[in-house]
Image 1: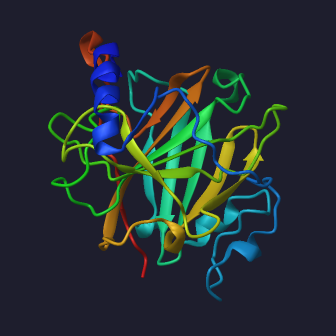
Image 2: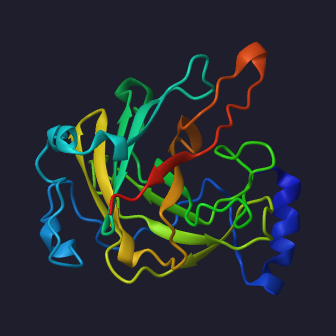
Image 3: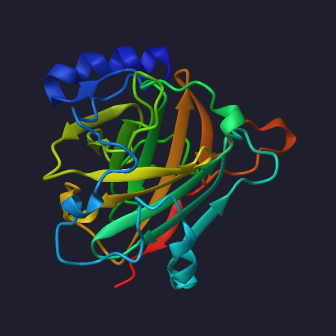
Length: 256
C-alpha cells in the first residue's frame, strides 16, 4: 500500500472505526494456535466426519475425493512470485480444506511475522467487497474476508494456522488496507506441516463470521517472508516485463 494511502486512510479511521495498519503488521491470531499434530476432533462443530485428516502427516486422502470438486491453481509461466507452487481447495458444508505446496528454499525466514494471508470472495459476487491487490484483476475488487496468521512461532517452529479474520471495511470495490477484525465463534482453523514444503489445513465454516454463503466462493493465498510477499496463488503471467501478476481468485464449489 502506498504511503499516501496510509495517510488518507488513517485520517478517516476515527470516522469509520476501521483499523488502519501497515499490511506487514501481524494480527494476533490468538493465544493458543496449537501445533500441527493437535487433536482436531475437538474442533469439529458437528458429528460430521471429514474425509480429510489433518493430523496424519499425509495428503493421500485427497486422492479419494471427487476430483471434480477439488479446485487447483499452479504456478504459471513467468510468475512474479515463485515460492508457492500449488494450492488445492476442497469445501463441504463444514470445512474449507486446503493444501499449500511451496518451495522451502525460498521460505527460509521462520518467524511469526512471516504470515499467510487467505483472501476470499465469500459470496461469489463481484459487486460486494473491495481491496484491489494481488488477486483482483483490473476492475475486480471483490474481497469480502481476509484471514491472517503465522505458520511459525517465535522459536521458528512450525505451528497450526489459526488465523484472525477481518471483514472488508472500505467502500464497495474500494482500495487500500481497510479491514475490521471480527471475533470468530470458535477455533477458526487448524493445519499440519505434512513435510517442509506442504501445509494441509482447514477453516471451519460455521465459525467464520459470514452469513451470505452461496454454492461457491473464490479464494487466494499469499505468503510473506520478512514482510514481503514471496508466494501468491492464483497468479497470472507477467509477460514483457509487466510486473503485476494479478489473476482472478480460485473458484471453488461446495460439495454438498
